[in-house]
Length: 343
Image (cartoon, rainbow, N blue to C red; front, side):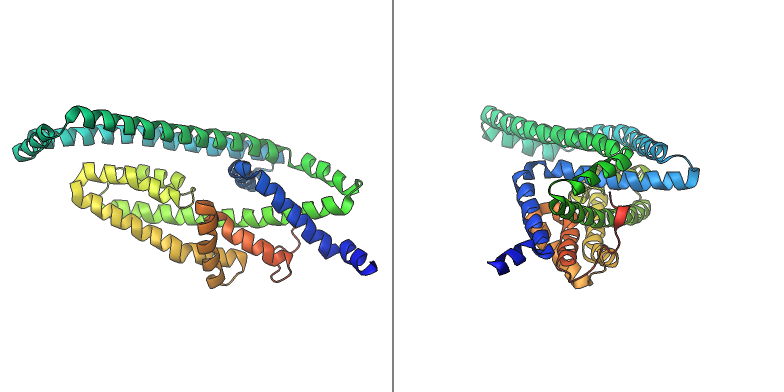
């Protein structure tokens, strides 16, 4: 009995039991995880940016965070204001190109007319419109949910970043409550994971900047119109792990087809796939290994496995999760003397 009691009161046992409890809570609230992760990511960037502004302007931390958020939002507004009109223009041009090809290609027009004559056009149109409306409603719903979660995450991350010091003081009060060891373990585990995640997010930003630079150079070499505007779009979408590359392929292909036909569109697709392969198999594992101090092979395997388990988020959370557990079980001390540097 004494051995069981001694085991139960052991610091490591309490740490592992707290970790199991936290995993259980995260599982129960897994539907909120995307929003929570976005808050952590934006808050980490906001705090780092606020500290950078404070360092160079000597302004108070709160003003530094506010200025940084204003600059980021203003930059996004400029990018959207440049990109949206261009894609509207390119989309209209693409429709005109299709109509022009139909009107000036009698063989194609005759083949289309013969096909329409042989098919039940009314049923085809009704079925097609139903499918299009269903997919459109699902897309709009998903897009609206994503926008809502992102806006909420940005707002809450700003509030968190501004009130960082009061929140730290409030959190330390739990360490003097009736369950000091339990809350101390929660603080240390959460602090450790968020710190590791923040370091990895900074790596993702570096990867995004490298990809954007290479993309702009490629656009200029291939003769794409408005290379800098397209680069701005790649910069924004590059912050979305994995999916950002796939999303950017659609508008880039449309612009390429409108500007240079199938040849340029094919070249752009091949170029994007090369950039994506370079990011996934060279840049991502190498930079992640450098920041996490893990072997490149371990980093690479972590990315593959966690991408299968967590989907696109696995490429962001895979290495932090592995580094976190290795740190907890004392295999690899990643976050030495983390202290108050965490978000």
